[in-house]
Image 1 (spheres, rainbow, N blue to C red):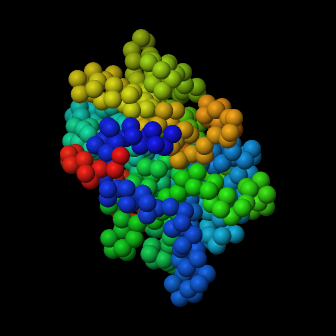
Image 2: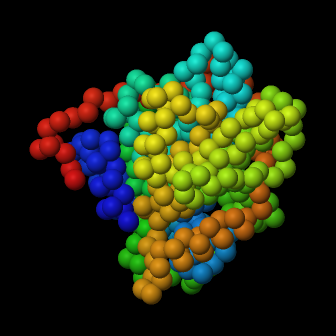
Image 3: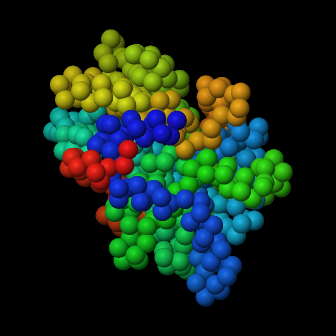
Length: 414
């Protein structure tokens, strides 16, 4: 799956450069273990190790070990802390920031659409494979359409190396931050210069490991997650209620379409939308949702997964024929739950069966509306308001850069 996905990415974006390949290699579970070993052997150069686990990775590991998603979270917390990790957080918490900022950004763009026609449709920015494709292949044309809101991984980078470091009396450099993700390209996202703190000479996310790499760590330690004693969940940066994880409604890729649509319907047109009706277009990976009133389409949203659908979307944009106001874009067919870094099927299990199980476990968590997360609201008040409006925008948003397509095949890695 990963090899196929990478080949597709190479074909569409001009390949992964040798420099990018090195960045991917440098981010592995071996690097995490090296830091943990150094902590045990060198008392003078201790790092506070933080691991942030994505809900998609948790669901993937839950499916493999036949556990609930929350139980998997408790056992992962125990496993990582047994290795010497100090804190285990969860990116559903930082995703709440991403959803709230995406909602506000869309409404602002929609209200200004008459003044700036090059701002709609707003295209989501959480998928690094899609961003890589956009920067390398379509440059200046497509980038203005892409949401500037940080992905949940990058949001967590801000929280951990900003707010958390400040609260703990630590410099960002004293923290080693690892993200567990369903996607190999998240390693490239963590390596972007936009997420490097020049003053502190450190990345906001030091290392990304995939769900499959966590499974490999367990195997190397001769441990099954089924045999690990569960530990209490860290609640500082986790969406937890009664010891169970909360998630967001909508797709397994974060629910961006769902939450932006319901928010925009209410804010822009005073319409309370309880249930969304998805219309399948070309295939299951291309669906749309509309808000109509008196026969007039007020909002037209779509979800577009997989590079074939993405290419069709981009071509429509170039011809000025896209009917959409917002598109949730993901590079992987079926989205993040089917990411290239997820745990692979067991012998005799089909990829389709595994994906269905992962989806069921992911959606079994109780939904949480971003607007109802009181702890996130408190952080907006206590942390972001204190750093000033411009700095808050830096911490929650980012920029994209056209990349000249390299033509020398000798420096490409296929």
